Image (cartoon, rainbow, N blue to C red; front, side):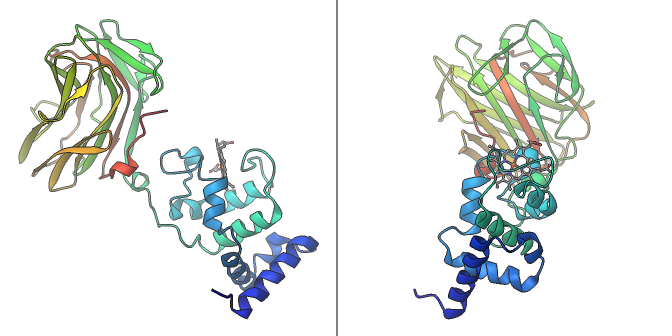
Length: 329
Ligand code: HEC
């Protein structure tokens, strides 16, 4: 495709502005017509703003890894930080981005114009976790988890693992109890856990349990063990509907790290292992009210879990597998 003359002109103007250094980009880019001109020019250069961002910023600022709560997959987030981003790439404040040498001027100009123009081409709020309230629990210590004081029973211990620090439970009497129900009031939810079920545990184990105070309403993650393999059971109970999804046909080796998720979208209840859906069922679920949590055992201290837990995320909304936590740190 040959470029229309207007675009060619824009490109030449840009090139001249860049090489002469006579122009102050930040001043220039405050003018609407200049922004338009630059944008036109950028569409002709090999590096679109998105390509630039993908190379320079996205590795550290994406939906999974939101350094400084900034994701370049999420337009709302980028626009909310316009001033900080412009200051960071022009080295005008405390935070200089990307870490290391300053970007070449043409790249700064490209990014500046693109952001000032509303970051076209990015999905608005691509990351629903930002709009859904969520809690991330990291099992890197015993005395508190996500700021909640724990009641420690037995001798669970903190270990290093490919998934980061984790708490290991002996399957006999180790457990943590927390006075919080992180999915209380959730009408839809995504509950993720990164864990490692170990060999030589009991046939039926409960590794994570959220329970409404004073009732039987609850959320559970369980496993069943057959030889050196396990399969998942996820369970929710509410006054209007309850469901156990036992994935008998989906066995996995014990002793490895897994991401498990249970998701409810208002109609369907699903569970996943490593982002692959294993089971699905209709469910009419109404939210739990406040309650408490046990980790490593059922809340009434039966069916202890043998293995380790690294992380859990509780999102009051529906995430797609692409948005799940990643197994590696
Ligand atoms: C190697 C990883 C890495 C890369 C690449 C990177 N950043 Fe960052 N960025 C970080 C980290 C870590 C922080 C938070 C650290 C801090 O506060 O100093 C951060 C903080 C920021 C902040 C501050 C946000 C706030 O609210 O305080 C902005 C703005 C920013 N980055 C923009 C960018 C832009 C634009 C790019 C690409 C041109 C980029 N970053 C590339 C790691 C990175």
